[in-house]
Length: 240
Image (tube, rainbow, N blue to C red; front, side, top):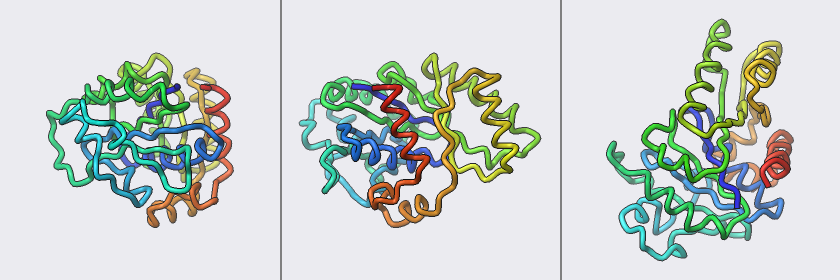
């Protein structure tokens, strides 16, 4: 009954990571629910190549709906369940995230692990969800930052997520295409100087990208990158 929020800036591979992580946890025997809480631009369904007749947007319109209509089970993987978003939804800046928190409380006791895929960027509008999660994993992709600005940028980013999120933030560095010495310096800075737990560094893997294009997470195809498997094991050990 652990709820983890997956947060991060746009383009860091947050949804791809959450989708593959959900598969890894389910394969490991953890009854896992992945909630697409990106109400503006939901994308979990695309990652699995599936659609659901009922979505989280339907729940927001009718919080008393039958939850069995809402929860989608991935065929062939008995321990992975999804609550998808409506990908045809036209983004509305005034949509309320508060019902998502209520939804988490309704389903919490039925799953060993719940992963909540947040909207991209700082959890400002989505802040009502924060009080309903137990832990926050911040996904960082340092590739888009000039080398000279990398450490100050990471410092500022983590400070902002700490201020708006849970008191403790765990970090995953995702698909970093930077020099090895710069990556090592970044890892040491996050854990050593900032004192923020670094759960894993997930290298760029072509299999993950191919899985995204195919609408099937690479972990579901049996292509489990070693770093993802280690991350799933780490999450089970720390949080369960």
